[in-house]
Image (cartoon, rainbow, N blue to C red; front, side, top):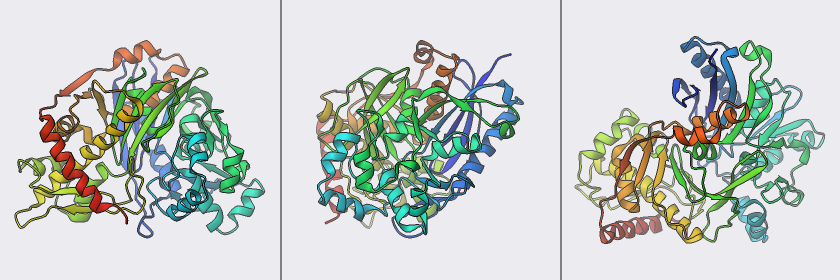
Length: 493
């Protein structure tokens, strides 16, 4: 009987399950949004139990839609929103607090203290990361210091920490496995990417007990099996990767020098640097792309915090569109941005600025400005932020892209993709399957159980549309200069 791969794509605003066949084609997709919790400005939380219930719910819906059983699934691959931090009781499996989401800025002041104490070089050299509230380590410290009895329970070994992958696997195995993979571990500020071990010095600086931490594994292996009561029969769990690493793998960007950009809630560009661990001089992140069969691949990453989320804000906050998909038509109703520039620094600025205190700003408004100009400026902001990241990557790596592979929900917006090509001066290539995060998780799981090999993965990647740049160099530089003036208005002083 033909078997399939089930991918969990647990994202910031929704949980999805996708079932793939041997050709890498999607047979079905099920998705459910879940609530975002904003207790105060700069704080972002999720209910960890809602993450689980929505994810297992859509998995069962996906199986039912094509009328297959758990026994028809060769393996499960998991991709997840990264850096989001969950702590739960080992005995009961009950979270001690809401999940603190990667976008959350509550530990920004503590990060300033770490920098002032001279720890920045130590963290970058060991983890490849900058000290920022984005990452899990300072969120974990906040939980230990602010949830009653959390630190004492942690010191007694009663609590477990995990990013979302660890939480899902704990639930899938009913507490049998407390694990993560190297891609997620490398985003915590606690993991040494040279030794690929939790680092005692970093744990000491952040005052985090080692007993909290999951075991770290490669990105593609059979880690264990789902408990029988979850799906009715046991399924191998065989692939784990943080969402952006999974998307890079799903884009078949398997060779050094290849890059992809994912346009989701945020925007995340990864440049494959092969077996070279390349530390950045321009505030990019060095991260583990994946580890398979004892071989580790590294990447440079630029993280933009607000991309597709700016469209959600136009819908939910400003109310100028009813549905996210309406933004393209509204933006296309004007020929340009009318001099309006929108820096969506709702939760600060990510790469290459790393300014936790910047806040969203719209500049260049005039009496003739309309909602269409704001919508166009919002879309263009996604492309401009990506251009800033690519410029930093060029300076760090001395590599010049021949093309940029794109995926994620906003990559289906033709206006945005054309403007991205124009402002970069580089062709943008959109694949037939843009659900590359889930596909990458599926590929990693499939490799582990012999469902695919790497050659098949490369062959399955196909172009859906290519966007060629049209702007002159002078026009591109003029627009970028105006964008950088807008950025300057946004920065914290």
